[in-house]
Length: 113
Length: 115
Image (cartoon, rainbow over all chains, first blue to last red; front, side):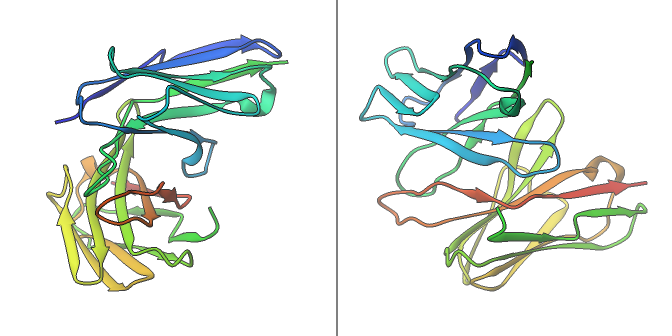
């Protein structure tokens, strides 16, 4: 079955710096890759997703890149702000049939003012 | 996501008790899911349902059961709770068809402690 590895487990940056979180997946048939942000006491919130027919997707300060050959994808946050502090999860699934999302173990991002 | 409501938000109970966690949604989605979150393990799927008549086991269904009472309601039960079921539980919903899936939307979770 699918296995998703996520690194680093914790990441501390200064406000204004960039943050990068990386994930690798094992199932070459996976073609849908969402990223979730989880704030304290809240459920995961989808912040961006990418399907395998594109290599990069951007939404303001957030971008995701996908390398299908190497089976890895990354979340990039530019100009980080304290409100970006949260736990971020990557996930992978096939896009058809049952969307069984397999999650990474999470990255705790701390943005210091 | 206020469109996915979980009750209760917190629960402390004793070993051996029966517990029901409830989830309701106003998103009109057919698909509903129950996940468990443990520190350092991410989210793991317990059960999922494509519609009222379709319920399936996820990767960690042992010790749990579910009921899909209506399109908008999906309940998770622990028939006889044990301490290692202490965790955060999340309900999620999504749209989609067999040919294309849609993002999952999560509730704010139930923190369950079993003593």
